[in-house]
Length: 378
Image (cartoon, rainbow, N blue to C red):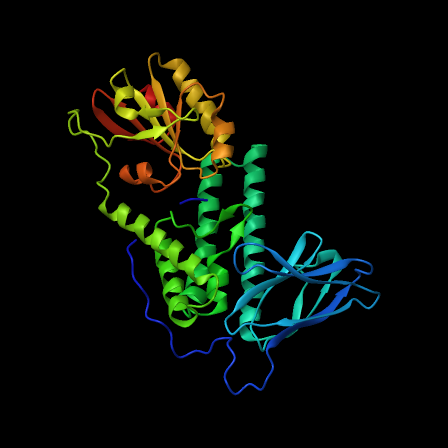
């Protein structure tokens, strides 16, 4: 799902935020209550998730009525929580005056929940969470179609990218840029599918969303435990955006004349530094930027093997943007070519890589972009 300029948005000062005012009595706790139908004997958990880790706060064993009530000390800034039943969970935000009432079914805990009493931000969070769930299922369907052979790789990649971009566009235009200091904006920014984030510090354009929310939270909630983390992510995203803007365009040959190409010096899975220039001095090189976690990766590996077998002397230098080093090392351990890791995306930025996979042929000092591996045989 990896797929531009930087603008710090002016803060929307006109709308209210879920924070207590000095006039609100002595109450300093939030209440989450309601009913879970058809879950007698199961345990419902209240967990805090606002700082990136999960902290268990309370639990309740449900009886025949399914009624539950949690009351905990609140904060004067928005904090993020979830109600969890088994593997399913319901997200919500609360401060020191929040009171939400919900009803759901034990058999479909997340997708069937309704809010009978809640502030506007928890209604927004419900909408965002359900949209993300629908997007996840759409992507899973496309990946299944690709694996079964009913959808071509190119079509699956194109449609998945479109689905992801539509989802992100909806989140930015409806929540993030409308009111970047709102809990809904923060919640929208950190939507995930499995271990993958929809908004990434590496993705072109996402730096604007990170900057908007981080600027707002730094101004309104500097004491919140997640604000420093958010600010660091925004700075990293802005740095990636600046690097992309300053990176030279991918060089291309003119009338067959040799041109310079950016050097890459990265470590392989054994820890040795591999130089792209040294590889090209020994013959033609197919440079591949990839992610082994991509659904299309197995098919790409098969095509690269076939091309290398057909073209004697062709070397392959593959750059993986996977940030999970353990996963990357396992994925490359049997591959018969040079594999290096570019977790920070610096090498990819130097080649102006905007989407994966990206392929280049370097031969006789000249470089050209390829649409598919087979183009290296021409």
